[in-house]
Length: 73
Image (cartoon, rainbow, N blue to C red; front, side, top):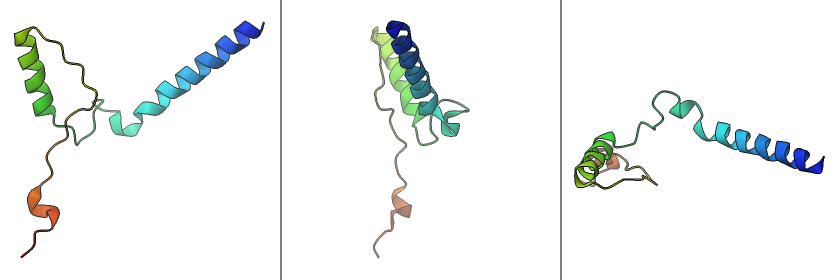
């Protein structure tokens, strides 16, 4: 009996954790708008030609526009 209660509680926590990680920001493509998809594709293609496998931990971010960073005159 106790075992099934713990199992049910564990499954509930796991499902709640999975549901909370995406949100509306990732609803369309699974990536934020600041991810540099060009670099992701290029690196994945390079790895495929070399027989390597890429596992992204932190996706590369698009470079910040240096002109809008508040240039000093």
